[in-house]
Length: 116
Picture 1 (tube, rainbow, N blue to C red):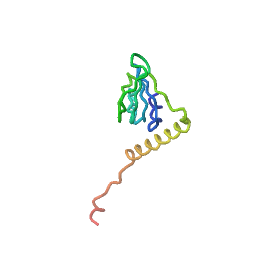
Picture 2 (picture 1 turned 90 degrees about the vertical axis):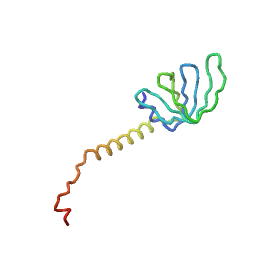
Picture 3 (picture 1 turned 180 degrees about the horizontal axis):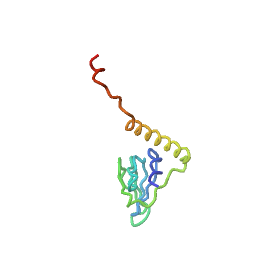
Picture 4 (picture 1 turned 120 degrees about the horizontal axis):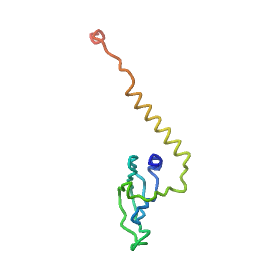
């Protein structure tokens, strides 16, 4: 699931926390190991509990640990098929570049070539 969240980087998402807080912001980055997210230009609103309906201060950048997240709501206008294909193509190109650089054989320079 966290690999899917990488496709949403740069998109506006709503993160609903287990404590009843809902935070709307731009998904800046995702840690795929534990599903932690970093949101930019975030706005918070309480959706349950004693503070229901209250609005908290806007935050420039906020980090949420994956263990605190209840739901992540994706934008309804998001074209999942196109985004997954684009992400897959980016991933393949990055893997190719990494493997090409690591695996290619370096040309050895002999002493005769240096004397010229």
